[in-house]
Image (cartoon, rainbow, N blue to C red; front, side):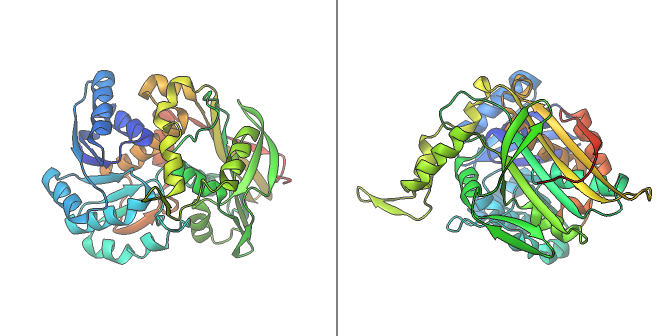
Length: 403
């Protein structure tokens, strides 16, 4: 049994902490910290009511490395789980290096002033984590996270090589709002409005945002329009699947979402450069995020399902030639809310965060340095997905995707 410190108090954190509390044989003590103590207390109250487990709470600025280091020293956790914003990845990693405590996150670092996210900043810390004798596990959410583990499970059990890989992220839920994002609005909108990038023939190819649209019929959801965009797991998948010839990421958006986003972009509301308003400096996107519905409040009204998975084509392990497999997971918004008080988008990220933490704390995954999910044995993680609310399925398709 192990003591853990979770940093961040949004919807993903709420799910993760609830699921940790449901598994006291692994997580003997749960400590929760964020900038806003009231958010931590609200999660702790819900966990106490649903699970009967006490969660200790703290106020902390995750960008204040000395203060965070002191808090980690005081608590003495076996693992720090970073569920704050990607902006804080590097400062939290620095605090873990200061204190000699292993680290886990769900999304790679992104600077505040540039809409760019990549692993290089964190990969550059590999030697320091190795010298400290501790492990950092990057991207233990769903995408990135589960989608990478899906690919490596296929490579271990079905395919000798993966030459083409398409990651399909479909949210078929309806929250009843005119416009809202299902996770942090700043991160969501920055991702969606960035140029799309996909891996092809040894390099990334860049295209305008939302310029490629394809219709796809998702199990348990139905036909949806999905758009090609960039997501960070493409970077690590291209690195750890060296034979990969083409890798793409797709996400579904309804017409209303696209229309709202287009208007907001046209009127300057998604800008990340500060502007002066009534004598104060404000960032338009941060102001927009402040007035939009909070993702953690969408649970009671969200209905429908998500369907997220990988379609991979390559040489079959059994020597039968090329084969294509589709491996995916379907999550119900209402079922997720009933269990943890959060909708499925938070659930599908929070559960893998808990499982990744369990992998590290139980010794199923070990190492010294900075690691991605693709470098780990997929089997124990996949087994826990089935046991803890995210059962997956795999089927063989008649051939490669035609889009």
